[in-house]
Image (tube, rainbow, N blue to C red):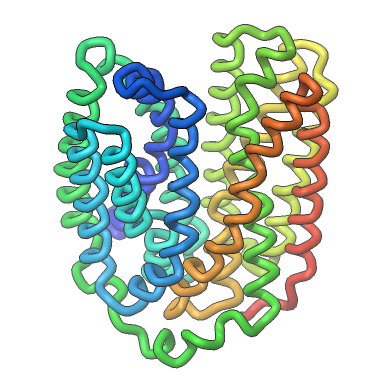
Length: 385
């Protein structure tokens, strides 16, 4: 069991890193009320969680291949959580926004680029299982953090809640990282020094980058669209919440499938990625056709299973085509490819809804994007042994 401590540590990093996006919405209304700005302006905040990693991830990826990863993670955790502490004391929205940018920078230093690279380096030959375990942290955050933050906000104001949460996470993460990640994990890689200028020259870099960019951004757009989609179909907010819970549980199952099957099927990685995209296409069709709640549930199971299992596909596919010594650089260098789809996907979906009053066209467009992602995956050449 001790050998899996780094994987469980990676799970907590992703839970208290990207997983914190699941509670962003709890702070929108209190911030709107205190600073006197509209909700639409505050909803721009998550864009920083795309922009900052997209800009700095290539550099962070290189660092992850050159310095001890535990040091990098602890620096990121400290920067992110101390930034949240500072935000809790800011007198203006502008200063809070600056603090949020530093939070996004810190989170990038212990986010997927670094953690997934660590999993590939430590668990050679078992990377699929390790990546799936780490990715479960995002699902864990979506399941546990919202009710906890809701209870805190019922007793404390937003400033006290944010401060308490940040300090608690800081202590927990330092304890877990010091316990779970070896001091010498990562470090300088001769392969990284030799290959840093060559990773973008081959087809796999671009095919994997665009394949994963399409697949993961479909998940982001769906996360934004689900609540208004269900409400527009006549379901209650409570029903929408249950539908999302079903998808979350199915996502756990999907990651578990990758943990169980991924290492055994590593020779068929590109087929596995394409299959997960097509499972989501089937889920979108089922959701598009659903006439009542009993038909929505299986659709959400398909979408949750396929989407949850696809989350580890980025580093998993890269591990099949690139040496572990440069995996951090590869993951980071591909992050800018996520920006075009991530920045326009959700706004275009909102524009379509405002124009037509429904998300039917959006569901069809997302299905097309997933089919394109599957095709890109299947275009990958033969894998390394």
